[in-house]
Image (cartoon, rainbow over all chains, first blue to last red; front, side):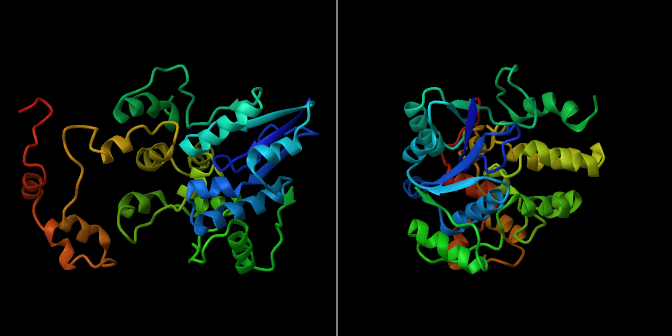
Length: 138
Length: 170
């Protein structure tokens, strides 16, 4: 099954595990941009990054995100994207997920994989746990 | 669906294209350019020693990597790996503490608590002397509207939070 990687503004980079037949796209969604209230400065920064990605094969479109993805997807294609922290972006991802319940949401890559650990309440506790593996003392 | 243009004669043409695309008002645009190449150049130019020394000053040696990290152009993990190749652990330690971890959205559940004064019973504020110190002569710290903050921390605390009690309720 081929895959369509939907890049959003929290993951403006080439997917690491691209295979032959995969496509990767960014959709410039003016409604979403207005919702984010991004300055022209921010928009230019993102667009310059997109031009860089386009040179590597990323496809760039202007559309409503859900409508645009509908144009690009067929039954033989899996939709993949990345989790996000930004609440407005999370809402957009939820909207996409409503349209495509099989959307594969990949986790955000942190400095270290702490998925197995319980949440830490203080930075001090976090640092105590990560200092050795992070700085290569182990 | 409209396919977007990615070839421009110059940066001014790109800016105008983006402005028309989203109907944004004309406003000054940053010199910081997007893209992985730019992010890698900034990473290569980074001097952790200078960063440690004066990053909090208005004219300090900041990394300018925040927008690249925020938008996932470069992962904090990749950044850490690049730095690991260039600096020994003793030099990296403080840099990690004060920048990477703080900028890592997966790990950072702490700063907002501090700024929102919910981290402890101690409120978060600064006085005019502190602003003078870090503004490095780049801001008008002597404007009359700032005089209200021209006091010691104890004086300001008493004035701003007259009913403040410590974490034990005293």
